[in-house]
Image (tube, rainbow, N blue to C red):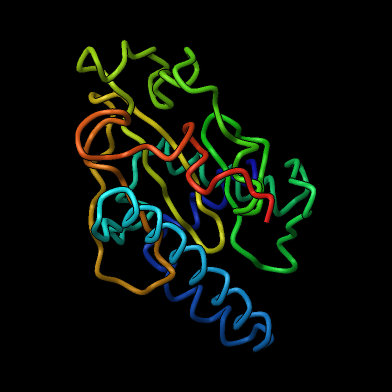
Length: 212
């Protein structure tokens, strides 16, 4: 069993929350504090991007079971690849031993970057890949034809995972009022390039080019 599938099985277990509580009790306090701070910063990043795009907070707490399998596995694969060193990183070399917010994308699964280097996962705007649904692989005609990509983000711990879907594959996230360690998701309520959402550059490039 791969690390991704093992982690998924663990997160879907009914005793997952109790296990996490037990692990937090035995982990060094400074490690728990740093991990919590990184998760809080990542959630703040998701909230800020959503608020900038829509003028309101669109984050929704959910569980592993409330997330579509293709999206859950993509996020967990990016996370495990970063943790075990299989993923490439930006020049700032974010490392799981030093928890800090990081960004990955469904269309660049082997790359993990800090928020300042989020441009590394950008797709050329209007390109075929930029119009491809990350769930089914269909190339959308574009928002001008009523067939745009719906961008979204899923956050787990320090990782912010970006994705884009066609209308038919847009995930129906199941809300959950549980503890803050649950995943958080944010989605725009119009396809990119249509309606009242003002895109901020290419898909996967909400935070600009870095250079800070």
